[in-house]
Length: 111
Image 1 (cartoon, rainbow, N blue to C red):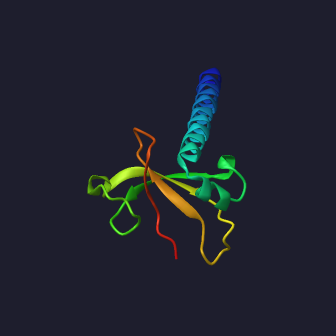
Image 2 (image 1 turned 90 degrees about the horizontal axis):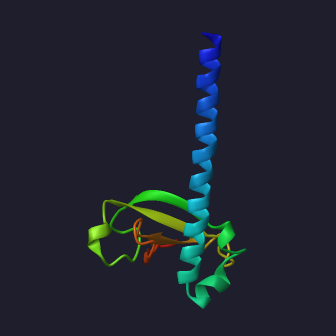
């Protein structure tokens, strides 16, 4: 019984290790893909580089961004956010990204 439990725990640990690495690699690729789509002006505003971006999956709702294609509303998208050098009063800037095409579909509103 102890051997079986040990094998199950070992298998679970290896499984988690392998698949947690996949997410970080995909996230890294997404950050770089989005960075390459930013304008030169947007890149100048970023503190750091694409490596410092944060990625989050979320449901896009009306009023969150300048997304013109209403087909994205109430659907899952990526939000890739970058720290801005314009100060904390303005906040970071984020772009919404189609989960399949990895194309920027809009920019998030700021305070």
